[in-house]
Length: 136
View 1: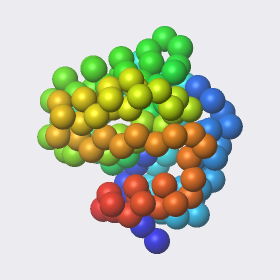
View 2 (view 1 turned 30 degrees about the horizontal axis):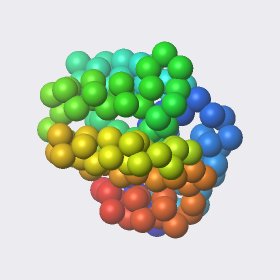
View 3 (view 1 turned 60 degrees about the horizontal axis):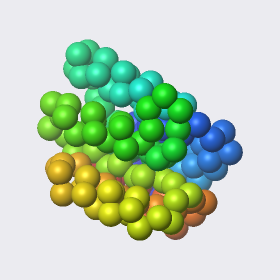
View 4 (view 1 turned 90 degrees about the vertical axis):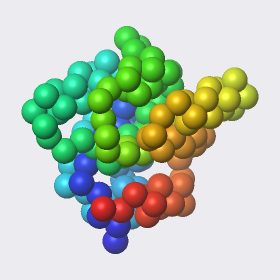
């Protein structure tokens, strides 16, 4: 089974969070899974972790449409942070809009982090592929 230190799920939809966690527990061993209802909460925690010199998440599941700070706003701020570690960011969205897909591709070109675009509902095969690629 794939081993991952920590995962952030940034999504305001409790059903999506439940589904991701359920699949994760069947395909990977993870020390910590953290949930955030918006991008601002996740970004604040990451900034705290940088200050504390804590281990940053290996994987972030990121929704685009959320209150307070959406996924795109999170990405804009996240890629500015002084993070040397390569974090895998899986944008999980119900959007099939080409604009959103292009925006994800643009973020890929702006950062050393791995950016993946996945449509909801996320499937077991998607999570298996992502977790296998980042196993620590």
